[in-house]
Amino acid sequence: MDTIKNTTILIKTKKDLKLKAQKLAKELGFSLANIINASLRQFTINQGITISKIPTESLDAYLNKEEILSAYQASLKEF
Image: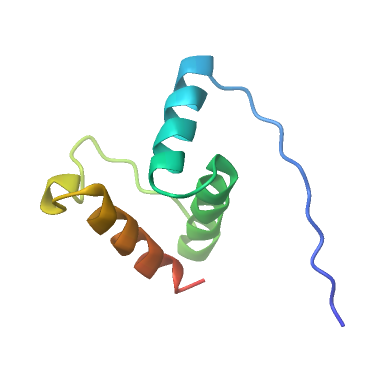
């Protein structure tokens, strides 16, 4: 039986960015680690990252945080 092993990644970031990200993650019902892990999964599956000056998708399409959370959870079902 394969055992899943965890590891730790240390990164440097601005304190205010970390605090804002933690707050938003908490509001959406996630930990910052959940958000970072989801980002890493998307990066490895897509074999890259999209960087754009113009947003490819606008959160304005969602009326409230519950809709954002629901859309995000639906996107995680791929993993």
